[in-house]
Length: 318
Picture 1: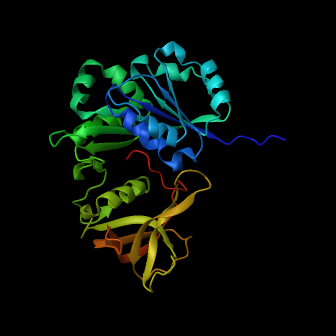
Picture 2: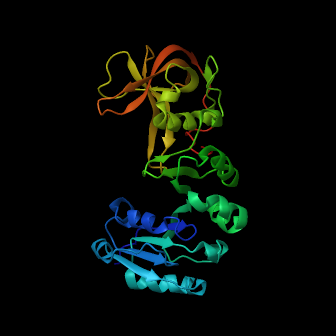
Picture 3: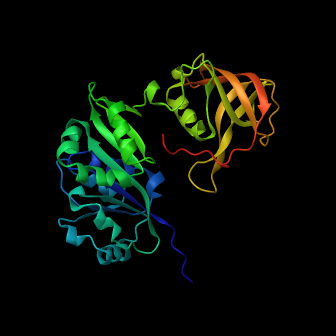
């Protein structure tokens, strides 16, 4: 009796030549969280200046297949490679000059499915391509789950370009990689949909996920400010008396991975993980035992609130 094969994730990396696709593909196949330690099929659809290290390919059980023409990327070819290699992970370093429409015509082998579409772009050529080759540059961006603009110098206007990218794709996560390798979201105070200068910052149901993620990256934005937000009080192990975890449940990756996201709150509310209430609180930036900074909420008052329309927190439109 043959065992049913597990889901084979296909990671698609799009972008123009020299936009960092090879480095990103390497970071994927070197990480067992993506490959599950099995065989990896790497389809390379164009040859850039950066080459794959043969020793690393061998170490991580990667079979590299170079495709020189768009006509070579067919459903039949993928099926043949699947039978020969039986990969547990597939990475496609795509040639965006072939056009994104070609991928929509492909029939993936059984158990294969698109896991993530990542688009990379080079900040030093980004504006030129947007002006002269806009369709070829932006069509893959419209389909991406993650857009990474790398090689960002100090004069690159992240906020301005972020707005244009958000107009192209309202669901993608957008990140900017600086010359020193650090990553940031490019969000300025004025880019946020709520008023940080208000006496009390009102966070709507739809904005909960945005504030949560932004406060993780930029706790200093909220330090000393008052917020009003709907959530629940959760009990956490080892929390001292007078503290609870304020937040909402979120689907982090799938229906089987539900967990609360939010902040530690100092206050008198008794946690039950069920009742929704409106919390008015003062935010304080604190440093944890691990040296990382985070927000601590200080309860001012709580009021019973209606259950949100959406059961789980959304992380889109960020």
